[in-house]
Image (cartoon, rainbow, N blue to C red; front, top):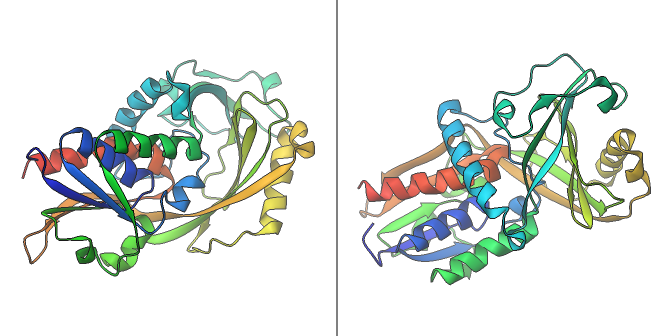
Length: 317
């Protein structure tokens, strides 16, 4: 990129805002356009770092590790919404730990006495937890400090974002129509936010491909309880029955949650495809479009690595 080059980033979820901040801090004149600021799916994330079920694995590992480095730095500043937190990932079957977990600080197998009833294996480690409303606000402040601007409006096409020599497509599920990309599909996720009854550690069950998830992430005065992963469903309407089941699953593991007061439901549609798409193409009018979408449930985990990849692609033109 040349200094001051105009770049329009479409989308204001975690991918869009991170990419916009990276490019603005590299000297580009960045303008973000999005229908929702910040994006609702990113607001609904739990969120714990971890490259779950995302391909291509080699690139996802690289992007995830780079993001992990940055989240560890951000955790030194409480205003970012990022904290390093200890906790347990457990399984009801004799599952091996995910390879990404074994390299994390404090990794060790759990003693039987540490596991809730019904679980046969578990692993303790320390990992970044991200309070998404606070974190997305931080990214907006960081973008503003770097001279970036934000405009809230709905686009009928990526071309509507111009004129600009560079457009970065971070539209998540919106890429279904804007690209268009028929390989993209939603996976509906729902979290329940409750008052914190005193939890300081996270818990996550390895549920594989089940649509019913079990996790809880403490963020100070609140706890985010999860969750669901309903493949092919993109509705953002609250499901009270699903919320009740989420609360019941979590309270079975942590009984203190049974008395917690429900504050809100957060619903998002994870933009999922066979592989994450981070690549450039040139439109007929000469505009360079760099795509950065399709992260599924790993948008936060891959965000900094993918944003820096976009920067490299633009510098290599």
